[in-house]
Length: 424
Image (cartoon, rainbow, N blue to C red; front, side):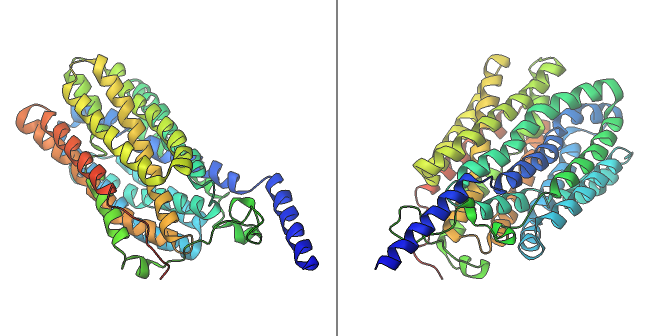
C-alpha cells in the first residue's frame, strides 16, 4: 500500500514537472498558424482578383466563379486522401508537397489567357496543393492536445483569420499597382517558400518525441491529473455510427454557402456603390471576425461544450446572411461581414475538435478527411450558384436568403447530434 502511494506521488510529481517544461505542441500550433495564414490568405483574396480579371479578359462572374468552384471541390474531395497520408506518412511531407503544388498553380494562373487554362491552373493544380493544408494541420493539432484541444485549434486556425485580415487588402494594393498577373506570381513564389519553412517544424504526434498529449504524462486515476480514457476508432468503425453521418450532414448544409461571401462580397459591395478599397475591407472584416471566432470559440468550447458552441455559431452565421440581404451600404454590410467571419471561424475549428472528441486520435486524419471531403466539397456549388443567380436576376438577394435558411437547418440538426456511446 505504501509502495502504491509512493508510486502515485512520483507519477504526480513527474506530471507536474512535465507541465512546467516548454511543450513542443505549441511549436506545432505556431507552424500550423503560419501555414494556414499564408494558404487561406491567398485563397480568400480571390474576390479581389475577380473584378480585375473580368475587366481584362471579358469573362463574366459566372465564368470566373466556376474555376474557383472546381478548386474548392477538388481540394475538399482530396481531404480524405491527405488525411490518410498524414496518418501514414506524417504532416511534414504532405504539407510541403502541397505547398509546391499550390505555388505552382498560382504561378500558372498568372499566365492564363484562356478560360480552360484557369480550370487547369487554379481548379486542379492549386487545388491539389490546397488539399494538403487544412486536414493535415488540423489533425496534427488534435493529436498533440486533449484537454486544451479547443484552445490549441483556435490558436492554430486563427492563422486563417489573420490571413483573411491581412492578405486581401495587400492583394488589392498589389493588383492596383502591378496588375493581377504580377500579384499572383508574387503570391505563388512567396507562399511556397513560407509554407515549406513552416512545414519543416511539424511532427505527427507527441509520442514521436517521447511526449504525451498536452505535455502531461498520464497518471493513476484518483490523483486528480489523469486524462479520461480516450476513444479509439478507425475510419471503418466510425462510418458505422450515426454520429459521423449526422455531423457530416450538419457541415454539408453550412459549407454549401460558406465560400459565397469570400468570392462575392467584394463585387456585391461594388454594386452597392462602395469604392474598391473600401469594398475589399469587407473581406478584411470577415478575416477579423474569423480571427475572433477561432480564438474565442475554441476556449469557450473547452468549457461549455463543442455542440452548444457549434449550434450558436451556425445561428449567428444565418443572422449574418440576413444582414447581407438587408444591406444597402457599409452601415450594415461591415457588421454583417464581421459577424459572418466570427461564425465561420467558430464552425471551422469545431469540426476537427468534435472529430477528435468523438473518435479519438488514432485515425483522426482519416476520419476528419472523410467528413471534410464530403461536406466541404459542397462548398464548390455556393459561389457558382450565387454567380448564376446574380447574372439571372441582377441581385444577390436570393443567394443570401438561401444561405440563411441552410445555416438555420444545420443548427437544428446539431440538437440531434450525440457522441458515440462506446468504442468499437
